[in-house]
Length: 410
Image (cartoon, rainbow, N blue to C red; front, side):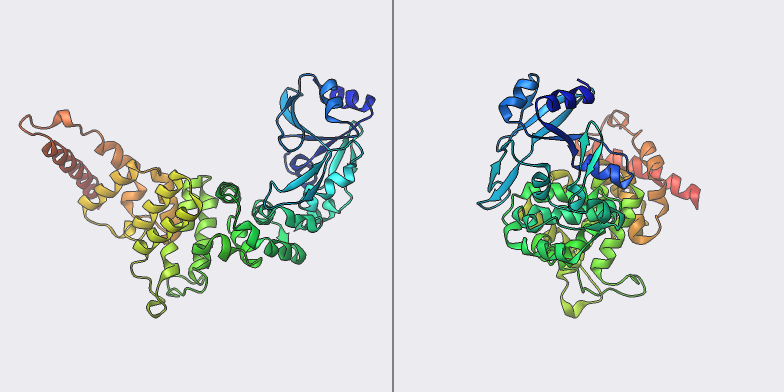
């Protein structure tokens, strides 16, 4: 079904059809819009189902349908109002009566830039709460106190700040802070979902800075909040405390790679500095070991994706020693460990380069070294060797190859 036919069929039955959500927002921002979401007012669920016999209902608490429009499966929802009557994002009473207007539906949404609609087929903009003006001003602003009714909206506002480079206005920061207690009780997967999207942003640091501005960082990501005020040697870290350093490295890695594993590893690489005893500052001896403890505490509270956990732990353990290795045996061990980790060499190097501003030669040429080292196989070993002896022989031959490369570069 074509969009024009879809809209015309519903309009002839007395309904009104609108494009809503991210497509409208991105169109207004001048960005390339992607998935289209539709909202319909003036019709009941029964009427909509009769008019669209191929629609598949997927919404539980309120009617949402999947409909093939212009060759793509799109969401079509009925206009609705919501009334908070319980805790969390499920604690809503939903009203989908045909009398619900587009303005009432948009009023329940989180921020003004997400509370616009484009009526079909004529393309009339519906913007009752000033979303276009806020986009022009690069401002994130809550539509109303309804913002408070789903605490994860606080994370979403911070995440959109990182995605779009927008600033969150003071009243909305106040609303975000007011979500603090209820947010702590939200399912971990909702928090991780917003963290995942924030790490995909051009500057992930904006997400964490926005949460700190709203007083939420300490409640949601206490291991990161603990980095604030942790001093570092100025000669090596002119950017400031451990939190500022972490934000800088995370953004630098984000500029270098789209890899979520590398970005998360950058975020947690210095996590242990948050537990450095005050009397030890500005030095942070042993922060690698303490960092693993912090990462485990974060995982115990939130249940991080397994690959994130492995990548973060590997970089925490290796990020200080990697630039300092000179002995071929230790270098070979690390290159092979990287090769067997969840991180690629390029992902590992992105974090090390951001943190230390340069790469040692063995990491810079690591792909070539590893390719040559992996030409050694157990079936090449002397026949008299058995079990662990074959493993040791393989490694010895790999170290010889590495020595040859290193000698040729001197």
